[in-house]
Image (tube, rainbow, N blue to C red):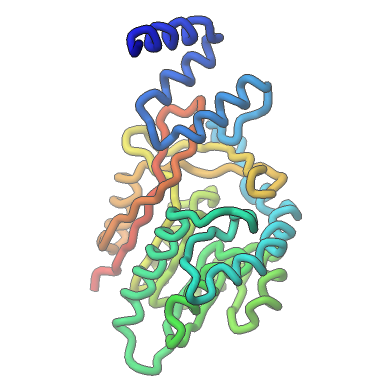
Length: 302
């Protein structure tokens, strides 16, 4: 029976158009890419543009893409349910991007715990009563700021978010205790106990220039999380159409070579303290290499 099923699958593959057959072979050994692959295959069949696509670097559109009004509208729409979902004693099992009816997601829980680990490393070093200075790069309307308060209810934070003006304007009335800044130089004019960037740095065209500025701030810890990394190819640009999250736009970002990235941070005077794994593996049909999402916590060498 198994032999007959295998033969049947082989026949089906031979009958597929070449592009679909190539997609199938590319994903055959990537279990983690299964859902993204199914979506890519469905898009190919329906003629819709894929969610992810590798593009030339000169097609960079990240800044304009993130200014689309649907991003602010969607984050505000989901804010109340997100805030409710993280209140004690609920598990941290819902992403701020999740729909209200979405089930608990272990990946979202693990990402929150990764954030908690990084903040915890900072908190234990602080003297009693001193505020923990944290810069959240690309922190949206304040999701991680809310998580920090829930994870460490007895800790006093000097919490700063660097964001685009549209998101900063939406976040200020929701979290008046948080400072929202909209200028890179202003945000990096002081040092912090922790600079935290979750799924944000890859949308900076001059990402290594930005990392240099972060390192030059003299901040004690730098944490990147939910970033797409590759092992073999050099850095390349991808375009994402994030319509599934309610964002009716598209924007570009980097898939970074993780060894190059780590070596760069080491050259800037930071040692790698710990690596984290994220369960996000988008399938990019025309990419030279598929990515895995990872996080890295760096400590400044004293």
